[in-house]
Length: 102
Image 1 (tube, rainbow, N blue to C red):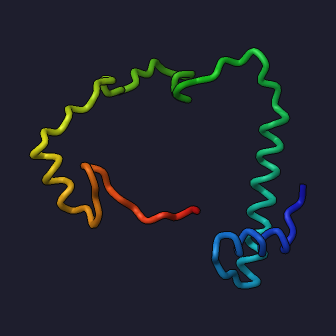
Image 2: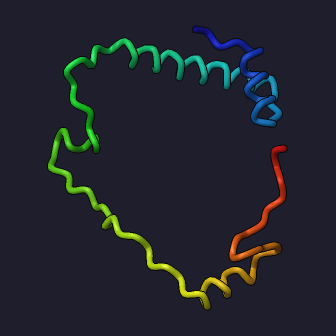
């Protein structure tokens, strides 16, 4: 799959960025190299390969530093009232926000 200048222009438009002709040519080359790398990776047969949690686990023992799965302490009514003071609009302890999608 080849990336064209039209594809780069479309991506730049979606990203709301302006590219010079030189930047467009460079982006076209970069995108093409990325697509080629993805195609190369997809062509590798990975049947029977166990997924890794950490890539370094292949060469050394890795102990993951995970936080305990505990609920956060609940706020007291006074703490909640203090937090809600910053809200421009609120009702019954809930933030009110303007409607975005109708």
